Length: 101
Image 1 (spheres, rainbow, N blue to C red):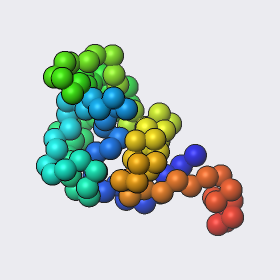
Image 2 (image 1 turned 180 degrees about the vertical axis):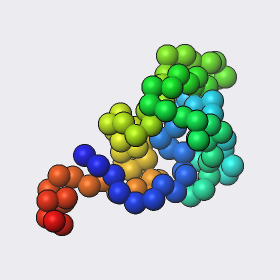
Image 3 (image 1 turned 135 degrees about the vertical axis):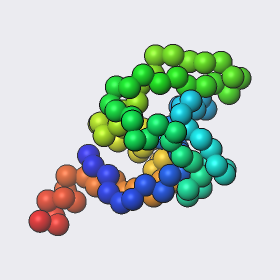
């Protein structure tokens, strides 16, 4: 499974289902809108980079990892962004890729 398009920086993929948010996510406007967020460590992030999540009640949650350019990142983008209708990326399944060749 692949994604296509350009990220609109909505930030949906930096939240958990319970609403915890990555400590590196800077929310500029309302989460979910285009250009609503910015990652403070975007240039330095890597797959497996330890991150802390901040729960709605302010608790620091450990044991989370950045999933940059990984299958896990794709899954989170689909679940937290595309399925919620805020992500600008589109899912491309294997059949779609074969058909376009």
